[in-house]
Image (cartoon, rainbow, N blue to C red; front, side, top):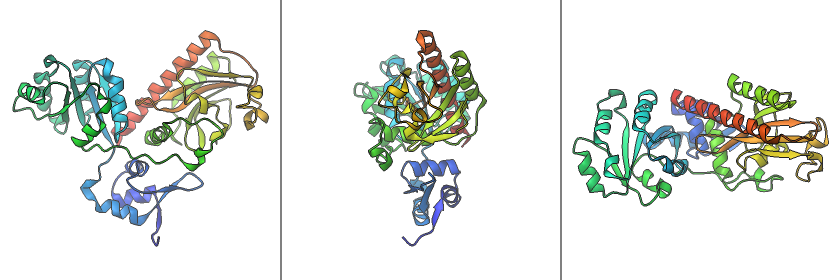
Length: 364
């Protein structure tokens, strides 16, 4: 192709958007691109100009969504929105908490899950329409009740979209896309480097990798809260090494670290590849006698690791972005209390990571 090859920053300048927004469009496939051996995104200028020519047809995948629904349905709503191009999702089951959240974060869409006529709450919805800062808020009523019945209860002054639920929200992505600017996420195929990987790769790896890039965590600045969590893990468990790792296609990058000089390793070095596939704490002792790890450069050569324990760090969607792990040069066991400590610290790290992702999304 006879077109200049440009960077993400150059593409953002052409499109008149932030570098983060351009990155989201690139990672979601809106702009065709490829990765250099050094891991940087490149694209043809003509593809960026073609995207620019689409004008208003291009929608930034940066929408924030609040769902007011019974707690038992939160997992289903999370799964439904995970397949759409949204930047953040909050699920609540209390109207008061929802009102507070609406006043502090101003999402783009409010979804109200209505199971009975008492759930419609037209007064609450009408009050939202009277708040100027919420003028752009799109309200969607998702219900298994007849649409005409719900619309009659809302009254003529409340402009809300009513969509039909059939059972649980699991099959809702297409319906949501039909009634909003959301589009199903176009996922790239599994990168060639992972097709014959010497470590296990989950069936949802393309979606997990999309979540990693969407998070903006890779090569981001150090954060005191995560540094403190790594320090607490090392001190409380008497471990020489503690890491907060983020796992991309080909790298294990350390967002926080104690007792290790490296800032990243090739992904095939990562014991965390196994942790990404499970919930809770994964523990591997006598690494040199385990056929999965005996040939690992960090086991066979210096620093001669012999023990690993880790727990996944997840985002709001439940995707494992990496892990909090502790490592030693001698075999050992955590015990029940140690496993609880590591699990709770990993959960705290997940909350901090999710908060950082949401905050970055609001600043865009």
